[in-house]
Image 1 (cartoon, helix red, strand yellow):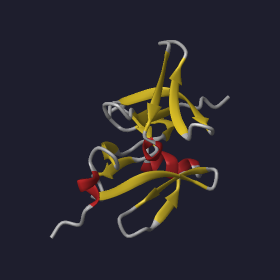
Image 2: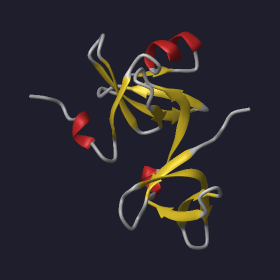
Image 3: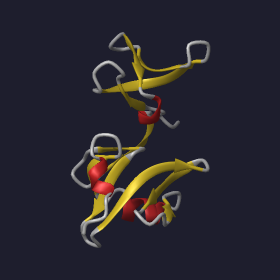
Image 4: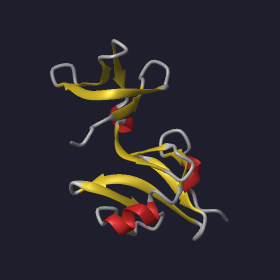
Length: 128
């Protein structure tokens, strides 16, 4: 069974929180909830992302919105969730699906998380 985990940046201090995700339609508010720790934190909607349930080469969990680097090829990709699966997209917009098990291992499990699109957006800027 797939374990659905989410993260989001708190609206009050910008720190990451992890757990389940819920949306309060009447309040138009987004929350991360952790029953084990006993918290419900309102989060910035654009920062909410799902875990890929994979770890990078050094062992860090990979999340939607992470920026990953494959040093062997010197490629930088953004991890995104599209059409029911995870894809990696480069700065030009070229995407590769990680649904194929070989691609998943080659791309995500053999890379390193170097930041995320919310905390380190400069990673995505073109170098001059």
